[in-house]
Image 1 (cartoon, rainbow, N blue to C red):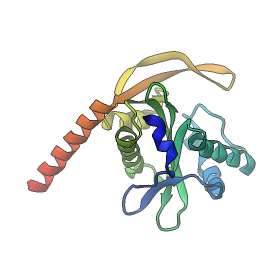
Image 2: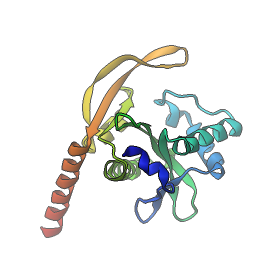
Image 3: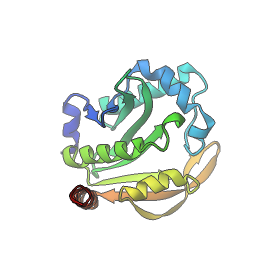
Length: 202
């Protein structure tokens, strides 16, 4: 049952030697505000950008409450060396239909290092294996080619363009819908293991 994950402590996920996925904390507010208010980071996010530390703290508190009130789960991507937040990743979960919508963002300084690809794969592995999800969706705008490329790399399928799907800044926006099922993700994971095995035996 999907709601069973909420009966346990917030799951901390080890990403690699440098980064960890942990629960968001109020102490993350300053770091979150620093990177999320960057216009380059926020340009494709159809959500309000915080204009003050107070706004940023409210956003962190909102993300923390998703797990508390069983509506989803949101992690901070933190450096192990100093525990500083460099990004975030999480899901809004439809408990009844066993599906979630994944969202993510990352400090510009850490782009193109493979961090987000690892984070998405780790989160999906946890959600499909332990949380009972059967489908993960990802919504982006067509201009966000970096995000689209990551999703395709991780086995997400493009399901179509949705007209006027999100309302932001007093106007509707078209979005691109990507999704992956539990079975498709497991198949993708097996293919990665096959590639890894081939590389190590060459």
